[in-house]
Image (cartoon, rainbow, N blue to C red):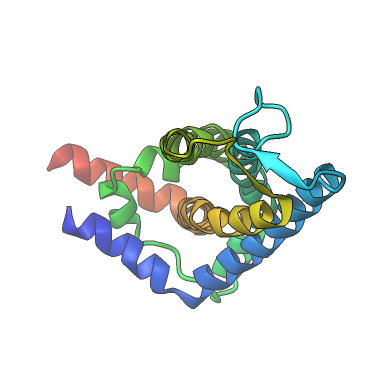
Amino acid sequence: MVAHWMMWLKLLRSSAFRASALKSYAVNLAFSLGINGTLYRKKSRILWLDGLKQDMVSTFFFSAFFCGLLTVLLSSCFIAREVQQGDAEAPAVEEVSRSLLRCFLRRGVCSRSLILAFINPLLFGSVTLALGQLICHAVERPCEVKVWVFLVILALWNAPVQLFTSALNFAAAAHQARRDLPLVEAACDRRAQEG
């Protein structure tokens, strides 16, 4: 189990991962703030929950969905190229084989994109919805904020969503970019069956 976490700690310390995650976050922010700033430009305030129509909750869910969908599609080829050029290190095949997430890490780009597009809103959106509902019930007036305040909150909220998405995608894309992957994985799978 400790080895499983070491793979992720090593990834988080990698300058190639941090640069990739930062680029993805910048793209995510540009799209997220641009789209939502345009949608809400005529409003002065935004409600927490308003039938999932132009409210904070729907924005959080859609933001998580598109982060998962687009990060994988837009960054995977760049990650693969960095690994093949020696600018980024792929996780060791043995670490991936022992990982609890090995099935995800072996998925192709389209599968990873769809999986994260549905996991992100479930994980981050539902936690945000629950916490927001608790806060809104404690407040005895309409739960709303100024649009610019919400956009700042959205930018901050996107950071952990992007970190989670980028970490999973970077590990998978780097792992699959190995030129010797089919041979090494076959040998690793044989060893796992024998031992």
